[in-house]
Each structure stands twice: as C-alpha cells, then as structure tokens.
Image 1 (cartoon, rainbow, N blue to C red):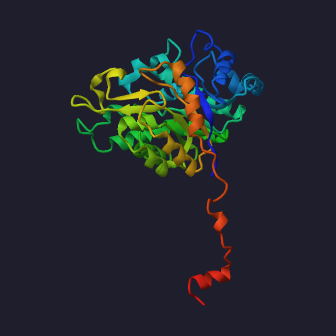
Image 2: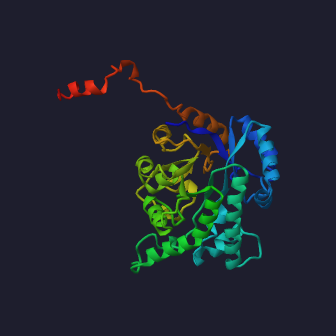
Length: 349
C-alpha cells in the first residue's frame, strides 16, 4: 500500500484581487502558513499562472515551481475545469457559460479556444513534471438526464459518441505528453456518476488516458454510495478533492432542490467536517486501493467563510492521512511453514 500525499489546496475559490490572494507568491505564502504542502492551480486565472508561457517555456515552469518552493510548496496539479466545460456545451447553456472564455467570442470560437487551452495544459503539465491533470467533460446530454419527455432511442449513445469524438484528439495529445486526463465526475457534466463515466470510457475506445477526479461531495448530493464507488473505480482515480456535503430531505424538497439557492437546498456543499461525508472511511478505502496522489481541499460552503474552511481543512486532511503499513500485523506469529509442510497441513502425506 501507498500513502496519500497532502494536504494540498485548490486555489480557484480563493483567488481574488485583494492580498494575499492576488498573486501566486502571496497566496503560496498564505497556504504554506496554514500547513499546506501543495497547491492545485486553476489555469484560467492569470493572477496565478500564464498558461501560454507554461506551455511554451520550461524555464517559466521552473520559475513557477521555484516561487512555490520558497514556501515549501509544490504544484499538485493544474486544472482546466472552465475550459473543459466549453469543449461540449448544449445550446441551452451557451449564454450561461460564455463568461468562461474571453469576451467577444461566439459559440464556435469559444469551443476552438477551449480545446486549445486544454491541449496547452497537457504540455504545461509535462513542463511542470506532473502526470495528472483535472478538467470537466462538458455536457451535451445534461438537459435529458431525467427521462421525461421520453428520450428517443439512441440519443444517449449518440451524445456520448459525439462527446468522445471531441475529446479523443485532446486525449491523444495528453498521451503524447505522458499526462492522464482526470475528469471530475460532477452534476451538470455528462460524466456525473459511475455509469456515465463508463459510457464515455467505452465511447473513447477505452482510451488509456481517461481517468477521474474523485469528489465525494457530488455523490452525497446524488445519494450515491461514494465508498463502494471507490471499490468499483479505484483504478481510474487519479485525483481527489476533499470536499464535504450534506443531504437533508424534507417533506417539500429532495435531490432536485426545488430551484432553491444553496443555503436552502436539502443537498448543499459544506466545509470539510461540517457535512456528512465519512472522510475517515474514504481515506481508508483510497489507501487500501493504493491511491498515492494528493488529497486536495476544495472549499465550497454556503455557510462558513473560505478562510476558516482553509484553516480547518489543512488540519482535517492531516488527521485523515494514513501512513500505509509496510508489514502485516500478524507477522510476529508466522510459523515459517515450508512447501513440504504445506502438504502435511493439507493432509496430503
């Protein structure tokens, strides 16, 4: 077994125009002071990284790593969640997602830009010495997640075929750069649970770079068994977001939330330790199955401040990490039985 690395922190929800969250240097100093050992960097935020330079220049990447090293940190992974979303967008959501790309682009231009961005992130990851990368799959089928009106036969298969066709050139580019592409399995994406992940994996011809980012909070909200999920998909789990959630259904609202804001929904994201996710069991499962990547705090909470969530998150993750054993607990009682003695034990003599 191997030991999970951590704690690390995803910077997307913390980046801001106010210090100390407005530059990589200052936010690194802040994160290090809280006890974090690595940062996951959102590549769309120019305050933290220049993706073009990272893809073009190994020197720039070395300098970026040097900035973090000054505070005892490293890069856990890069993220293209926003760009990945634009690889596949149903027309119903184009207006809502247009802010993810530079202003003035139409839908086709946003798509071309997003694909180029994700490909650049593959090269940037290689230049930084990283082997995994985080993104969203995007969604063509999300308006049809509930089977009413009745879906025509073949619609879902066609949707995953098109999604795979869009991602295959990107996946091949990641393969050329020696980096796995970890899709965050997330509501609003076509890859939102185990079955939908499998459908995409099959549609790509079981591409060897298709991996996943495991975040149990999304499964709490879906009422999916997030522990057994690890048993099913541990070979695909290349990244791990430590994010909490709770689900408290009422006589008026359940999984779908009744169009309510986050604070009023039965299912809502919480800071780690304030929700219902059993992180002790999650860390045990991941360690049991040999996950040795980073445990990355992602703060999303409708009640607690990000600063408090980050402070507490580092401590929680540090407590949950299991130092994987290198010996069996009952080795002291080993009788040293030989192959010949096995026969006696089995009554074969």
